[in-house]
Amino acid sequence: MSIPAPTLEHVFDARIDVAVPVEVGVTAAGSRRVIAITGGLVTGPGLTGRIVPGGADYQTIAADGLTRLHARYVIETEGGALIYVENTGLRFGPPEALERLRRGEPVDPGLIYFRTAPVFETACPQLAWMQTSLFLATGARAPDHVALSVYRVG
View: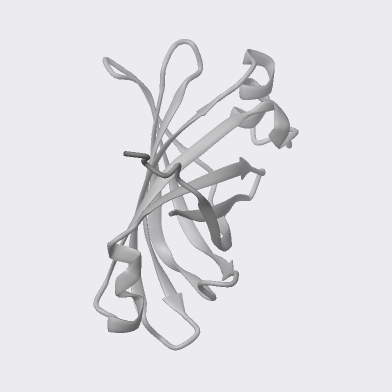
């Protein structure tokens, strides 16, 4: 029996606008940060809309710089449907690049490993397919936003 290899289908790109991080401090789990999501845009072949202000990205940063990301926010489609997003992932790279990111400075996205696995929930029947597939995203952090490219795993 031959099991097919997964494929990736580009669904959308997102520009997620963010506020200045709130530095909670170093805890037993690592350095904690919370970053408010203030808005943004979603464009692509599978989805178009906006990021609703009010979500946040909850981060834990280990001593070696590995950042565990857990963002929760809502997308509103052009047609008015709402999609709840829970996006968990990792960001890692050379110490000097990670330190520049932490200071809010621009960093070449090629230097940073930034991958997430978003999960979607919606009451919209036309978007039910988003709840029955796995998704992967690649990301890049800029001083005032996060850029994501989201793919459905086929």
